[in-house]
Picture 1: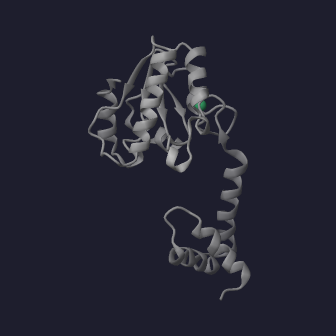
Picture 2 (picture 1 turned 90 degrees about the horizontal axis):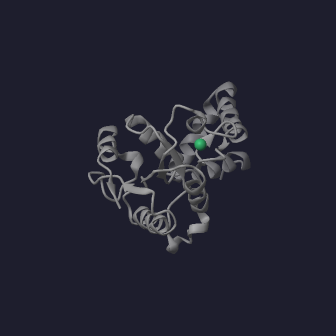
Picture 3 (picture 1 turned 90 degrees about the vertical axis):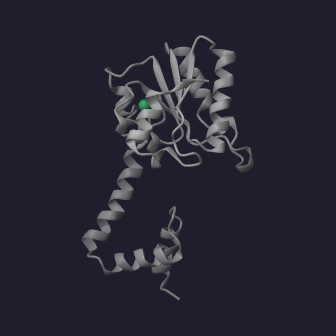
Length: 199
Ligand SMILES: [Zn+2]
């Protein structure tokens, strides 16, 4: 139906989350109408982010060097680690200004049905950090979903076994159940963080 380059662009857009066929087509036609300069700026931005942004070697947050800005910041409290599923959750929690520790980004949540097992997440790296660094508290801020809860339970059970001296807390209730952290407003998330409880 379309010239192959147009079809290719529509196909690539339709792989993006939340973009269906019609939206993919609309975006493609928008770019075809745009100036060369605007369209190529988008292509360059995609290329630059893929070339320059990687994962922090300590916490697996997004980083434009070996370490992310939070791990590189010496004013952050090193005794508290907040465990989240995705880099976007770090942003959500930072916006609350309630947390001064460091993070650990798992890269997802446990979901045996979808084939996500402990070794698919950065769990071994988390437990390694907890034994190497002087960590006093681990705040589990996985999403309040079935998979997020399963992940929280797995971490809490492993730490009870391997590092019983570390206090393990979970965000307080009040977060919308079944939704992702990134959709919680700052006030709710800040309160959930301040009211975290031991697990
Ligand atoms: Zn980091």
